[in-house]
Image 1 (cartoon, rainbow, N blue to C red):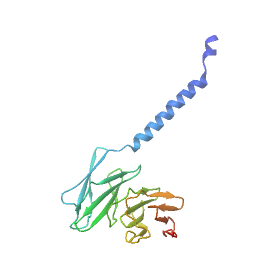
Image 2: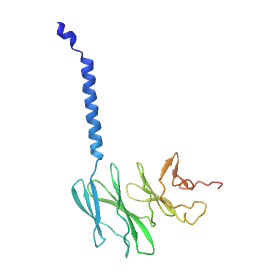
Image 3: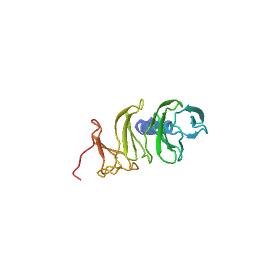
Image 4: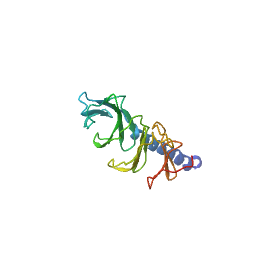
Length: 193
């Protein structure tokens, strides 16, 4: 009878719960950990994608007479990945985006039409991009344009270079300290500057 008094179920249950939650946390972190490598084929007609040690060939349609300017930037997300390819023909430049899922399937591709891309802002249903003088809101599912603005580099009011971090500030998408766009209407916030 005396040994039963030493048995305290509550601390044991709490300890078991602690290990259980630690296991859940570990598993959820591990599911997002990805190993991804991308190379562009010499013909520039497909990407070689190695995702979690599985190899995929992804057909792409790059603009003619363009070559890859910099390394391919990879933005990994829990449910899909963005491959950003900066291109040049020595007189102009562009950023080409390819969205792929974790099974190596191309979801969509899109030419942003400018260089110096920012790291995109990825939200539940949309992705926001910026390149020099241009900003975009595309649907995450199909890469469909919701709204966009161009000619921002030439406009002294915004002088938008595209290398800023994109942030959400309430209903606004902030591309720089001078450029905010209403996420719902797609209209630029007008300031008195």
